Image (cartoon, rainbow, N blue to C red):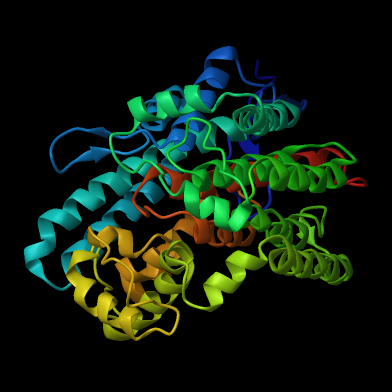
Length: 466
């Protein structure tokens, strides 16, 4: 109810230059009185939203893909369905500025496709643009939903997913659950099923659990992502020691170098969120946590040399194709392609366009073995969405897109886009498919978790970590 004849204006409770956030507080001004009405931004999510988020996360974990046609896949189909429904349910929370920002991103991506060399590859790049637009849309729906949730609610959900993964892996390894898991996997995945159990025995002295996923790396990637989002969202005072315990539990239940990224991810968390005071980075606290974060990064390196010594030796001797195609090769290709096509890159999904250059580059690398089987299709040459960003877009378009997406996130109330991008880059070393939902779900989940973390910091400015 309006008292008197006044004017309404938004009083925004977020960091940044007047971001568009649904949790704005409307103030009614008049000569008679003031009245403040708060929107239910953190009242928690209902069971429908929670169920849809669970479906989205299940889609990320399984990466279950449906072929709409012979050349048009629907990657992570459960995530796509859930994300589109979530976006529709949050349609009233989409501000005009945010909608304009999304349209600007898609328009710039279209321009990058049209300006890429090799007009014969335009149909393939258009297909990639459609997939990327789909992935951004469903990720946006996830972001808008998680952002409005209660912090403890989100923390409990992601911790539950992480613990289910641990329990499933332990059951598969020690509880006789492997035949059931393998039977389900054979039904879910027509191709791409992991069959390198002998390699696991060599590197880890046991067969790594897959627990309904297509390969062990999917298990460790999702466990790393879900546990880290729990860390950022959780208000628990003792969450950091428990997070380190979850790192140890993960290394025992599902050994793999991807889990060491859990320690590396502490860098962006401590630097860009843990060092904030009253919505801004405190310089003294930043230097202190920088030293602690560097210690965790050094610990990750030491663990890599001790727990995975045989695999590290295989990597350095050029006898680990998996690591090469995920980390070493994409880095070499990214630098090379940015030098060849600095303005436009190879274009979205442009691996076939630069396949010959990349293959020749790999053959000259000291970390590549000439005895390895030639990889086909060309998309298997580059399994790293961070470097695919630069390969697809080139340096110029790549920087432009990061700048535009950064501004788009800022107007939606994300307090630290640096945290989001560094998190995205770190996890990109363990996942490919730049145009798929997983790549952008990482960025949107990091953004939503940062909003929840900042909201709690405003609620308890003297105890930002609670």
